[in-house]
Image (cartoon, rainbow, N blue to C red; front, top):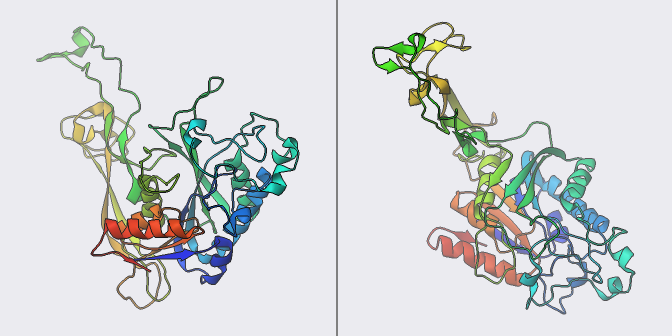
Length: 400
């Protein structure tokens, strides 16, 4: 697998990439008014995305970036966009970190407004939004991208079981961020089977109570029924819109890195495990057979028109518990080309991150046997990403 790391402002680098050359985009742009990733004196510091004077200016800058991303993305491709929120504060030229303020202690260059911005009034710096308001950056951006031509297909809640603590006493602490699935067309490549979840109920069945024996509920073994509770339904289900994924610490010199498990789900769903056509780039598609299973001697009346035990009877699946109904199994039976080109051995799909940072997208893409293109403004972060990818697979990874 090959990971390309391109240093520079993504607004300048993206136009150099061929149209329709990537299958999937997984990225987390800098958050608004939070911190700078460039050293003092860097010529691009004043233009760094996230340092804009107002939320509207920040969103406009990202719309410009993703307009060019749309050109680079294949028509059947997907964009997975992770974005966090910020609060409006009275501090000159600065918007509060949604995480604990103390985490910024000792971090140089945390305030990223340039001198011109610092001369504006507080109201101008906040875009007219009063202090202590949540800015709503994720949805401002999502609606702006939809207005610019993207299809807003799904909002996903990234639920963090280990969120950063906050020193706040007048509101709940933050424990989630948004992830948006956006596409260029109504139809696109999406491998839902690659990210199915275990079918588990969020609450146990029944109330744990078993009735005393009575004539109508009694057989040779005594009272029928069970007081056993369960939550594991059996089989799998389609991925839900809440993903509970723990953040993962990283000791490298980078303030915030995307959780690898978050990037993994996006890449699995947005690219083909089998690869793509080397001629036209169309991803191979998974062939799936679905089957419902039923258990013998555990029948009851039901709505299954044709179960194992005949019309309108169904069993309890592999669990042998008739309350659970049939269990659905999805099995991959093979792969098929997504085009009509003369069949050739597939090549890896390509994943793009225009805000490469510490290289998590490239790291995960390489592990999943996909190629990656990372764009990073800070050369030091680009070196960090290169070292991470190579360290994870020293004999196999190729970074250029």
